[in-house]
Length: 146
Image 1 (cartoon, rainbow, N blue to C red):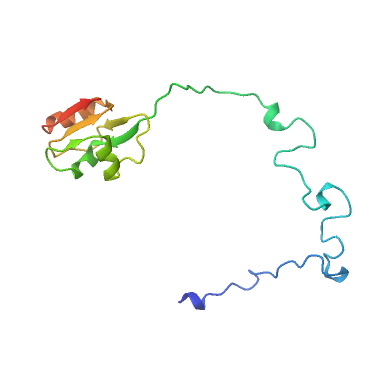
Image 2: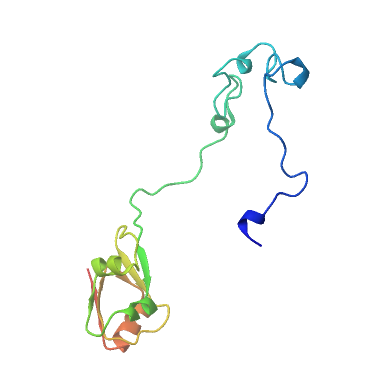
């Protein structure tokens, strides 16, 4: 099967509506938009969520929840992904971004202890989990908190 041999199933493709092409077409005169009123005019209609002047639902429902503006978001890196670096490398945020392990630094970088580490690395990050600290130290590396 080739792309030029593909075709629609019978009944899948319908002809386009030809609006305003005479009374016999079924959509002549007003083109299916009725006689008068806001929706029959060009550019007519109401914005999304408008309920005809009634207090809209997004204003009738109560606000809820809490947003902590002091919340910090950390970019997460697992210990197993640090194996891509060579022995003795100082792994910092710039190196992690260049290697593609972190897209964006956010408020800092946190190293999690998922997986194993086979290289001796000096890892510089804002936070470490307890298991990550153990794994890095057991591999003969260092964990430096920034």
